[in-house]
Amino acid sequence: MKLFLDTASVQEIRQMWEVGILDGVTTNPSLVAKEGRPFETVLREICAVGIPSVSAEVVATDVPGMLAEGRRLSKLHPSIYVKTPMTTAGLEATKTLRKEGIRVNMTLVFSANQALLAAKVGASYVSPFIGRLDDQSQDGMELVRDIREIYRQYGFKTEILVASVRHPVHVLEAAKLGADIATMPMAVMEKLVQHPLTDLGLARFLKDWQKVPQESSAPPAR
Image 1 (cartoon, rainbow, N blue to C red):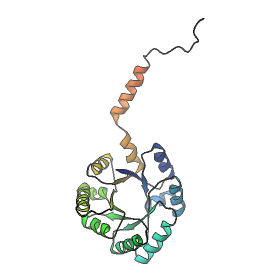
Image 2 (image 1 turned 180 degrees about the vertical axis):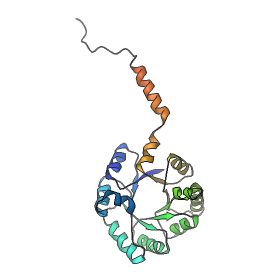
Image 3 (image 1 turned 30 degrees about the vertical axis):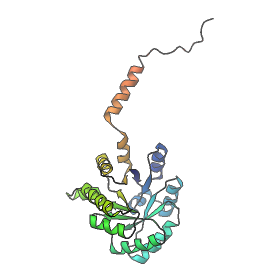
Image 4 (image 1 turned 90 degrees about the vertical axis):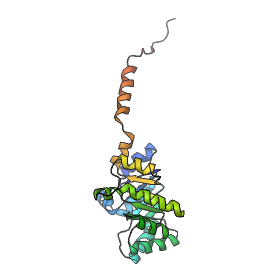
């Protein structure tokens, strides 16, 4: 499963890219607004890191507006995937963009029927928001399970990008269900590395190492 960062922080992206576990980045208007810099400037910097997949969201709600934004965004860098919302206009715009060879990530998906429609118009990614479903006392992972079953049944090539990830268990469950991608904030990605027994074990190893006789650095006597 590919791991994406859900952020517009170039610093965070560079950090995880250097670690070697990062496969892509998702952004949205709220995340970019936190950076306090022009949207396209931030996108260019993210792409310059070397990220192979960067999702950039349109803010228009009508088809002509989405098409204009999507075309402009796609020209910024070959890594760009255009994010469109799961609406009737979003579906129409996605179909047209895909015919033009522009890759699309359909976002704000909350039902399997919506995911089916996203695949039918050729979306490259579909983004079910599992955390927000959990907030409404629904099982977000059940949605991922349903989408996986439908896509397998009909051979859709659209990749399932699990979004609104709140904690490491979401990542684990998404992986077990066969999701293609999970996107998450920096805090969650850092927690994937951590385990208290790892920290305890390392501390014990280092403590025991202090008891091991060390080789003398002095030159041998003649």
